[in-house]
Length: 306
Image (cartoon, rainbow, N blue to C red; front, side, top):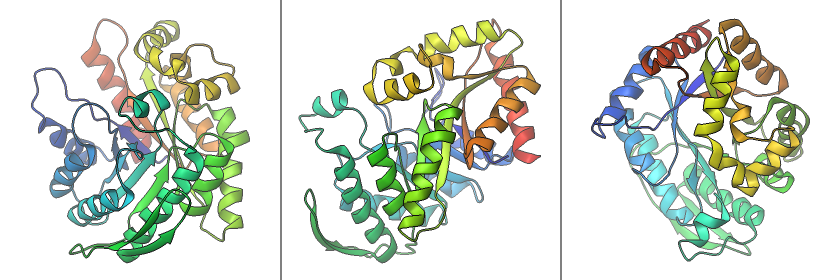
């Protein structure tokens, strides 16, 4: 199985640089990729550039950088720099984020599917060629840059709705999801984005599923903990639609939980549904948090190296 880690959490009392140590550790453990979100803490791409200097194999991804606050030219130049520093291992995940957060910045959350299509078109042109001349409805960009050691980088989109999946298939390299169940991936995500990519003459897209994962003998306890941790996601319309489609009430109920055999089977079901990679957001359950993390990581490491 192609298994990555969805990290980006600096443990209490630890310095920011400890995140680089974690990426190094995950590479040594054999995971295929390490992902971090761009949220209200540190700058994700800066940290991945530092991690890229200390690693040699593991892919480094963002899931995701919100698009509206950053002009695609500025993000492309930053991503090209990071990709050069990590030897071509960057996977740039981008997405429109959510209306409340974008509007709180004084920006309009307007026509997200069209916005992402044009945004990624500019990103890909600059990432592939170092220059772009694009005249669209939301972006008119004629610019370029010459980053030393630049090489094309992958771009994946947090595509959930049909129009967003169509755009991701036609102009990006795939999608990275969160709070999306295996049935939705099988019946909606994978077929829609694959059809769009095929119709545009593009290679088969990546379908990367990010999921909370906890190996624990008491499934009810592990699920209850996930419900507590991830409660806020169920209030965001973009995620709420995906949860409803899966027949899930509380966001945390999407978590993959159970003993080693049960979690293995559930993860395999995601691959059978069309996922090309699973990135695990490991969370603890029970009284021994350290032991819970270790048990889940041990299983995932075995699957990643199996």
